[in-house]
Each structure stands twice: as structure tokens, then as C-alpha cells.
Amino acid sequence: MKHDELVLRQQRLLVRSAQLRLVLSNQAQVLQRPFALADQAQSGLQWLYRNPQWPLGALVLVVLVRPRRAIVWGGRLWWAWKTFRQTQKWLTKQSLQKLSP
Image 1 (cartoon, rainbow, N blue to C red):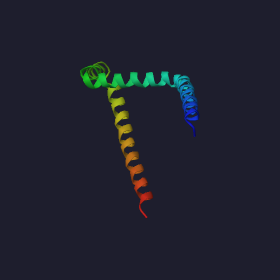
Image 2: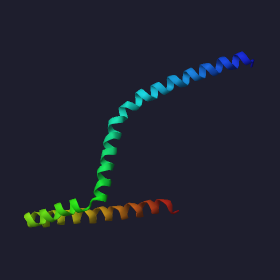
Image 3: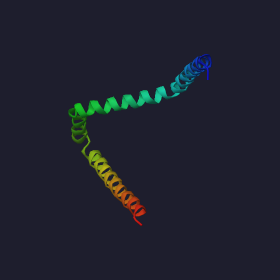
Image 4: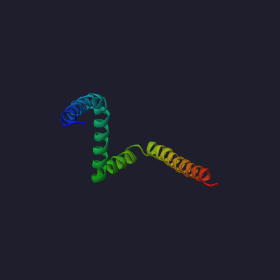
């Protein structure tokens, strides 16, 4: 290829690249809100990890004000946790069985 042809090809590629960046920018706007919500949830969790006294205080308050309800919900949460762990172990076992010949 001649020098002029290479320069023309380079210019076309640069224009195409700019067009593709604009298209990507427009398409990424659809994801802006879900990503903002995910960032907000992550910030909230980080705050909870830095300030565990607030959720623990709320839990103590619920236990003091409504002890029966706290016991019932505690039992439900304990059952859900055990079920989650059992399911997790079962899925791990199933995936290991698939891998073994």
C-alpha cells in the first residue's frame, strides 16, 4: 500500500473508532441506574461493617420490646441459614460428582 492509502485508512479507522465509542456511550446509559443502585447497596454494606453497633442496637431493642416475635424470627432465620448451608453442601457434592469419572 502506498503512504496516502495508509493515511486514508488510518483516518477512516479513527472515525469508525469515534463512532463506536459514541454508540457504546449511548448503550451504557441503560446500565447507569442499576450500577448506581449496586454502588449504593455496596456503600450501605460497608457502612454496616464499619458501624456494627447500630444493627446490633436495633436487634437488642426488638428483643426487649417484642421478645416473642424476636424468638420466632430468630428461629426462622436459623432454619433458613441451616437450609442454605445444606443446599450449598449438596450442590458442592453434586458438582464434585460430575467432575469425577
